[in-house]
Length: 122
Image 1 (cartoon, helix red, strand yellow):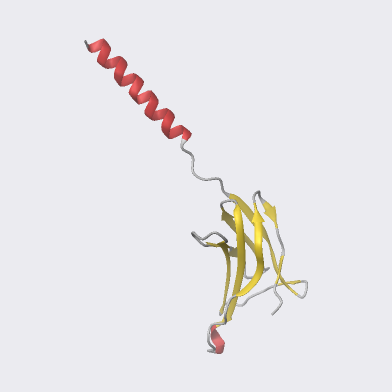
Image 2 (cartoon, rainbow, N blue to C red):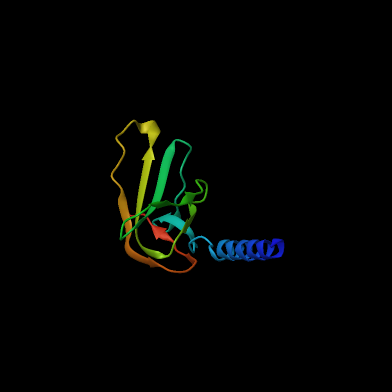
């Protein structure tokens, strides 16, 4: 009887282990590049808030890019999909209202890791 219980437990634990090994998280891709204005790196001072967001076209969670203020480079980790990319830059020292987001790209299809420089027009 003990041998049968031991065998059942071993099989059960093996199946549970296989289940968890096979349950990796969703695939994540890395998008990185530079924010540029007139072809030059976008540099922000310490009083400026810079936001870069990747908004899934079909809804769901929004993903933010991590931006380096000193050279305008960014990196975002997100699942593959089609995104609208928006940008907000606000100098808090000017005491002005927060500007509306600027759409940098619409329907951007991101399926693999890639480098993507984004031009800021305004």
